[in-house]
Image (cartoon, rainbow, N blue to C red; front, side, top):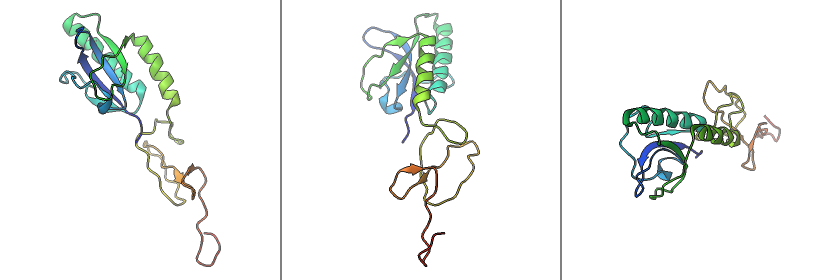
Length: 159
């Protein structure tokens, strides 16, 4: 399964810091004491780190305006589901991290989107992307490949 990014609001204990957390690895990697979702984009998994960070920034801005707490920041990391406060960063720092993370992620060879859950098929079908991740073909040795393997015919030739 591909990496996901889970966005949640957190009120860390014991220091009381408030952050919008982007958990690398999905919900299972987030701090367990998230605040109940209130803003659009909260408690959601994203496959594109840039979308996750933009959602986190939007949530942080809305939360700041509602509480008048200008110290609310975005925090990025993974806790493995344990209580472990993450260090907050600026919005520009979060965006820089997301851009670098996005460049490292595998992408669809047709549309360029970040791959979510990957599936593989055997055979030589070349189906168009149509806005969803490509379906890489599987070589006989099990590694993804761009070119299909010829299928043997019963008479010993290839298809």
